[in-house]
Image (tube, rainbow, N blue to C red; front, side, top):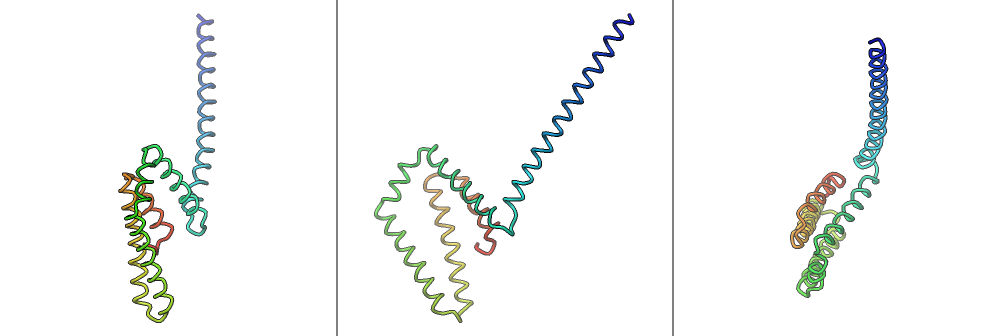
Length: 157
């Protein structure tokens, strides 16, 4: 009877020690993981540096390319970008943006009109990118694009 009680106490002490050791290991790993996560979040969301913006853009581009490839949209994308109608419309958009740029540069005193032209052009470019993603059936990409632009380039949209 004493032998069983002694074995029981050894077993309970051993289990307690094992549980405590595992708990301390989990807490230690959690602390390390949280430090890594905190470092990553500090780097990404720090507005005083451009590193977060660069990381966000690189991740966005890589994930978008991955989505295009995994959804088998590469041939559709190629057809869309090589279509003469698309090329013509994109050339027209580039010329329009250049005309706006030249107007703003040549009329520096007309601030109110220049700001309106810049804002309209920025929003139109964003709308074009969102329409492009819709054309190739990427639903999530516009969310991240708008988020990146709204957060890091706060006066851009």
